[in-house]
Each structure stands twice: as structure tokens, then as C-alpha cells.
Image (cartoon, rainbow, N blue to C red; front, side, top):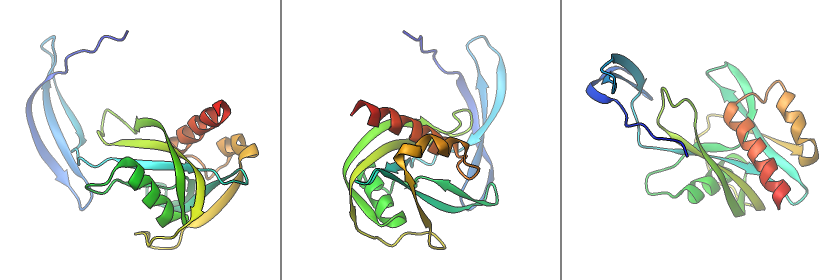
Length: 184
């Protein structure tokens, strides 16, 4: 059993920078041993996200290639997006599939809830496996059409060395989906 420490005392918190999408928060902390430090983090938005690994009846993975401003390149990954207010994880996952790849899913299996960088972010992303796909398209918020990429499940491990497939969340989702599929 892992012992859970009581967190440090927050002496002060304030927003030190903001943009249209993000707010940076500075925290003045006092740890249990009396040491004080200043930490910075993305101010919690209260919105979590989903990422879905869709698998077709033909045993293909469905991925999207979309522009990533952080790397200034087109990246290959799984459908993903924020959970809208009042929406469940499963509803958000199905909506994102319909918006990004034009399919819904009859079966969604949650794989794991992950955090990208817990030192700086509090938002969580639920990774899911989707099966029983059926065609249904919803209008999304992407600025350009996403490229749909079919990848044979039998060659899934080759994705790990593919130059365009480098997002840590997509890699984690793939590995967890492969583990789940091997147990079915």
C-alpha cells in the first residue's frame, strides 16, 4: 500500500498570466517540513477530456492526422477532445468519434484515466476502447477536415516507431488498448 502524504499548505495563489485558452497560477506553498516554495501551474479549468481508440470489425485502428500547433506539424493520433458541461465521459467519447472520424460506437470500454503532466496540469483524460462502430457524422470544431487513417491492428506495434505517432497519450492509449484486446 502506498502512503498518501497530506499536501502542502497553500499560503497564496494568484493568476500571473493568461491567454484566451490558459491561465497560469502561482502558488506559494509550505511543506510539512516548513520549507516554502513557489510553484506555477495551469489554473484548473474543471474540464476533463477523452481519447478513444476505435477498432473496426475488420480489425483496423482508426486514427486522425491533424495539425498540432505545439510541434508545428501534422500528428497522427486517436480521436480526442474536451468533455462538454453536463456530458458524461461515454457521451463525450461517442461525440468526439462522430465529429472526428464519422463513426459512433456501440461498445466503449474505459481503459484508464491519465494526467499529462501532474506537476503543471490538473486536467484528466479518460482513455477508452471503442468497438461496434457504425457510421454517424457530427459537425466538429476543427478548422479543416481531419485525415482519417486506417491502420491494421495486426501492425499496431509498428505505430510506436512511426515518426508522426509521438503523442504520449496516444501511445499510452494504444498500449492499454492492445492489453485489453489481448484479454478479450
